[in-house]
Structures are given as C-alpha cells and as structure tokens.
Image (cartoon, rainbow, N blue to C red; front, side):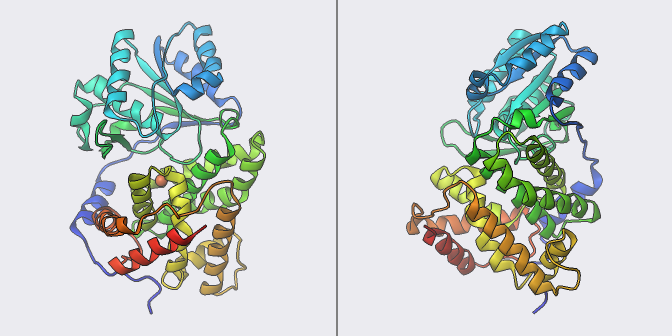
Length: 404
Ligand SMILES: [Fe+2]
C-alpha cells in the first residue's frame, strides 16, 4: 500500500485554490510578542496617528476588565476610544450590522479587536464593509471587497483560531445559523499582539479547546497536499510548541511562558491555513458544531484521535517524518513506529485535557446528513492526504459516538 493514497485526483476546485494561493501575495500582520505587547500595540496605533478607535470585544472580556488597560493606554496618548462589546460566539450578520452602526456613529478611523476568533471575524467584516460601503452579506465569497478595509489591530484572547493572520472570516445567518465564509486578502489585520498576559485569563476548558484547534490546524496542514517547505517549517515548530505547552497552560493559567508558547504555536499554525487549508477532521467536526452546537475546538478534539488512527497506515511516512523532526522519535525509528508515537502522544494529550469528549449526544439518525455534508466539504475545499468513503465516515462517527 502506498504511504499516501489519493482516491480523487486533480479536483478542479482544488486546482483553482492552489492557483489562487500562488497568484495572490498573502499579506501578513506585524506581530508583537510577549508580556504587555498589547499595551505596546496601543502605542503603535497612537504613533501611526489614529485618533478615534473602536474597540471590538465581547461582554465577558469587557466585564472582566481585559479591555480597560488598553483603553487607558490609548486615552493616555490622546486617542479617543469607544467600545463595542456585543460580539457573540459564532457572530451573526446582525452583530456585524450593529458594530457597523456604532463604527459609523463614532466615526472611527481604526479598529482594535480584543477577543477570540468570533470577535476577530466580526471586526474583519465590519472593517471591509466600512470602507467599501458594501452590505456585509455581499462580501460573502472570494475577493468581494476590492479595497483595503479600515485599519484593524488585533489582540487575540485565545490561542487557537489563528484568525489574526488569516484571509477568512465566518459569519452566521441570524435566523438559520448557516455559516458564510468571507475570503479576502483585505481582511488581514495591520498588526497583532500575542500577549500572554491577556491569554492568562482564559479558563482551562477554553485553553484546552482552542489549543486542540491549533494542534489540528498544524497536523492537517502538515498532511495537506498543498503543504510546502515554508508551511512545513511553521507547522513543525507549532506542533512542538503546542505538545510541550498545552497541558501546562491548562493547569497553570498564569504561566506566561506556556501562554506565550501557545500563542506563538497558534499563530504559526494560522500562518499556514491560507495555503494548506484544513482537512477531514475539520469537515467532520463542523458537523458536530452545526448539529449540536459543540464548540469548534472541542469538536476537533473529539474527532482528531479517530482520524489520526485511521490515517496511520496510509500516512505513516509524513506522520513519522514529523515525529522525528520534532524529536518525539529517534532518527533511526522507522516510519510506522515513529508515526505511532506521534499519534499516541496526541491522543494521550487530548485525553488528559480538561474537556468533555463524550459523544453520547450524537444521534445515529443524523449520520446520513452529517456524512454527506462532511464529504461535500472535503471534496470541495481540502487537499487531504486521503479521501474517505461514505462508510469510512460512518465508521468514524460511530467511534466518536461511542466515547464516554
Ligand atoms: Fe479550526
């Protein structure tokens, strides 16, 4: 059996995505790293002459006082600050509309986002709608903006989505909760601060869930047929950082070294997403999110071990190489043994983390719809190392359902 099996070759959609990645130069934000980098980011905004900043966040972070020091830092530099704290998980177009109304009312000249993927995604679409005058719904699709958005600066409060660097934003329909993807190079922020002091307030369960999301990005990126030398370098570094620090970040929330390592690992993984995309794990996890509202990171944690074990014999060469590159396996370990060590390490880590992995809520009656949707997602978007059949996705869902 070949080490990597492709059951579907040369899909037109995938070829198009590959060409898009080669033709477009993907912008990257300036990155500030380390304790109090968020405060330094505020100084950068003042230095660049912004005078009226709308801070986009959620109610919890606002009430916890996470935003206040940044507001003070901007105000001390003579910058007027306004706060929009109405972002909800899985933000809807209604949330984006409300943010836009406030953005226009205060005549903001820049956005400062403090939050996780939801706040960053909502602000991205607000930013692009503000400068283009287009309804946020009309930005759904690829490259619909056609001009730069309002300058956006980001302080991620979680370490997982990589949204601070990606060209994508996900916004949900307010009534149907259907998710829509906005893809535009104009969505990339000007700068981001990866500040472990901000991340130190993250609860253990959120740390675990978002951390596994980042780990899934690295592993699916590593196995993607669109991976290249650059993404391999970032993903290797990210896997090493996450495997070495995620458990510590969960049990020692104030451990700034672990927090910083997780922020960097998540960022490195995010840097690769626009090139490699994700894969079968995300496609199945999205079904758990869509049917049962399972948070994205936890859904990935429920799916990843099963897909990795399934991949093992087919992808032993790439998985084994990664295990040796990051020092998990000795250089003379053969592919299958090294791949097994990596998969066992990832599975053991996930089992040890503070989150529920039980799949008893999954309804067998939902399987047909979930299988079809997952397969459609994979075949339309992802350059996976192995295309699964209907019966293989059924079997994986059954395994996930049996976990207690
Ligand atoms: Fe993800």
